[in-house]
Length: 203
Length: 203
Picture 1: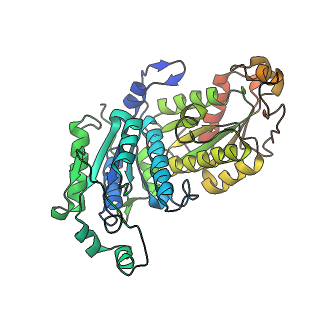
Picture 2: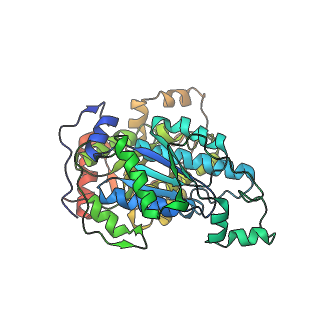
Picture 3: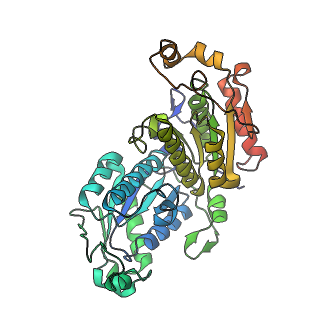
């Protein structure tokens, strides 16, 4: 165990840790970075790269994505429309819990519907940052990291976002990542730069 | 924003943050402290006091309890037996996510059934620490901070843990807090001392 810094002279309210005291102790604000985009757009990869950069800076950061949510918290949910909606709702609520705990949480989910994302924005409040991983569909399909597009084209999967189900692009995202023209590292640095300009993390 | 420490020389695996790298960066291990006990036993109060002590030590700590879970993540659940079970299951899964993110999460829920708690223990693994807030029922009823026992006795609430529904005490909890004989601060210090002896936080 390293000798972690002690947070001195914090102000406490009613025995609880105030938002300000928590920010002062952690050295950064809590936030939800909500990464939305097609399957294969690079959401999780970019989220994990940003997480690493933030942890290197001493921030409390973590990633929520299908890998750690679908088999656990949302293991009771399938892929029917109402289950997908509930999947996104729960992840939004967990993102809120992490944000209130002072973490910078990177939530990487296709989340194709504008209204579902807006509900989370309202729930999380000002700490919600929508990140559009704007990889064109044809690029995602050419990459096809999980072989899903191939299966869709073979008729093995129905209701696939971008092919047979809608994707509603963010109209005014806080961050738009034009991943076709930049590396994963450049996308990650773009996100970190945004957090600095917003005063969420120190420069 | 304070000048947060930078975590240097971490080892990264496949672009992701390994458990070891995260622990080294944060200066402590992740853990779930699961506080179980009767309504009015002091679970949330003790959890918040421990959270404060941990944050003063520079740890990433947070509390999950009815206040921040029942109206959000579990706002779709009522108080029927199957809903209570699902309430505890989801909180267990969220505790796992916080623990894997490297946080020390204090989850304060009556969680009366041994089997429900054992499921969470299995899911979280070695980082699960059961804390029995062993306040006697008569003390909880005398305190009655939310006026619930009064309402139970008046017949306004059915199925109340300890009165008309069972509470299955932990058989071998990692920590047992005999709150009738000590202050909230003493209980909180007992928890912190345990974390130090286990090497979860630095001494």
